[in-house]
Image (cartoon, rainbow, N blue to C red; front, side, top):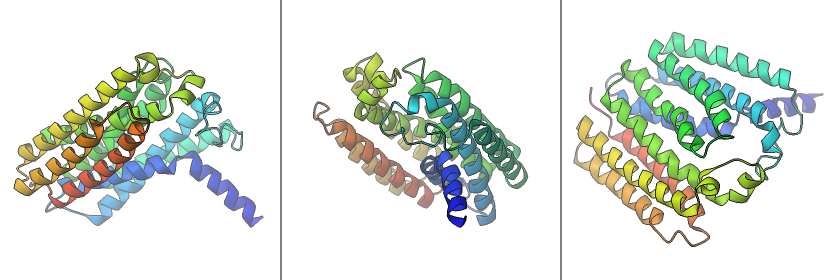
Length: 288
């Protein structure tokens, strides 16, 4: 009996895509720490992470419900709970609504109204707009970067209770980071996407176009990192640090894209790049 309950809990846990939650939580925390010099509250940060994680989990559950028809056609997603009918559609919807309600209340009560609005906007954009667009347009990846870039902005707004230029730049940095990251996935999994009839950029526009767009957004990522430092007067050592991170990713991103391992290298280097950037903005925090 106990094993049965543990299995059910594990299934619902996986349905909320914990990997996506963890990745977004890291940028959320980095955004909060970056903006909270002199006003840092561990309690607020804890409630921010908990509430945001529930909202993100809710959107992922809804995405799993809608995507079950195509997930079964892809190797990396064919074992998901909705594909194999381990969890019913009714139970999944109830789970998604409960997560959304609890997460929304936590953000509204413990942070501020702007952070709550950002959370709801990210939820709607990912659960419905992105989920629908991925079947219709190769630019769904760009659409998906919007909810994906909201967590660091939400962290920033949770600390400052205001939208400003620095928060916007932080948002744009994450938009630009996501494009090479997700286009690398599209290149690595191009056969699976073709089988599922999802018109990702490499299929709709070709590999050369995908490589070009990856490199354009990679360069924009580095430029916005530098602009953030200048905008917030973070100083010499911040600029040196982000320049080093940028050059590291630039060398890999502008390597020989015709080599089979290039998308894999671009993908893993993007993870290292984002982690290092999050560390840097957590150390060199924006002055009030």
